[in-house]
Every structure is written in C-alpha cells, then in structure tokens.
Image (cartoon, rainbow, N blue to C red; front, side, top):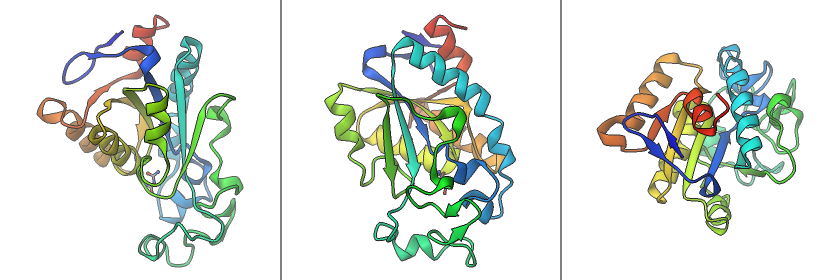
Length: 221
Ligand code: C5J
C-alpha cells in the first residue's frame, strides 16, 4: 500500500505495520489530569479525537495491529526518577492525589485511555515510565516477534511523547509516519515545528501525512 506523504510517498505492507497511539489518556486530554496540572489548556487536545477515532476504526476494520501507550508509573513510584517528579507543578506532582486519582499512576481513573479510543481485545497496551514508548517497555521485542517493520503514529503530545517515540523507533530501524491530524500539542507552534523537523532533510525521522491519505490507501476514504 502507498500513502501520499511528505517528503515522499510512504509504502507499507499492512501485515507488517502497526498503528501506535501515544498516551491518549484522560491525564492529558481531560480537565483535572497531569496536563492541566502543568497549566495547559487541555481542550486543544480533544480536537483530534474524532479524526483519531475514525482512523483507529478504519485500521481495525482493515485488520491492522494497534498499539496503545500510557504514560504510567507504578504506585510506589519506583520507576519515576526524582529528576522527573521534581519538575512541573510543585504543588501537584506525579503520584499526588488529583481530581481523577493519583497523577500519572497506573490503574488510576485519570491514567486510563479515553473512552472513545479504548483498547479492544487483541490490541497491545504498553505502560511506559518515560516519554518514549521504547524505554523500559519491551515494545521493540513485541513488535519484532510480530514481524512489524512500519509504524504509523498518532497521539499526544506531538513534540514530547510522540516525537520521542518516533525518534526511538527510527533509530531501531522502523519506517515511521506521523498522522498529522491525529496528533496535537498544548502549543500549536511546537506541533508545527515537530511535524516540520520529522520530515525535513529527506525524512530524517520519518514521514508525515493527513489521516485522509491513510484512509484513501485503505480504500475507506
Ligand atoms: C508529556 C506526553 N507531555 N504524553 N507527555 O509529558 O507527551
């Protein structure tokens, strides 16, 4: 299959490609979670939910593998280094009790993936303690076992966990494409810059394309 992408056409085999949705969690998208504790306007992120849902449903219907990630720490915070916990909002840190439970802690209401994009049976769900999806998760091994060589990315936030994960994947040899309207940042200028830098220099980190181009490739546009 082919996607009309930048900086040039992206070719993929459905059986060797996974859709990776990064951190579409209540903690980032709904009021009262981690994103809002940092002073962000979380409503900006909600805008990508419809396009992401359409993409997810089309990808599922085509039989493609789906990976969901959650930025999540163990309840004892043994996987959250002080260097991470001590930055951000000093009065509501990772592990503290917020309106949706303990901030960024596994199993808490705020740490769940939003209802509209909830994982279904057979999909991979990865809890990650870092910004990147490959750090301390075993994701690379899971993908290698399934013969996955290509990754389509969506999720939040573009310049933090999405870009970090794409760069990690690129260094591990995956051909990566970012779905431009399925990713968002609290800072529109940061999203625009991240999209530009990913596809610059002949696709130094990968490709970018609107989700309509993927849907067209899947024949559902
Ligand atoms: C952040 C993320 N921004 N999922 N996490 O801290 O991008």
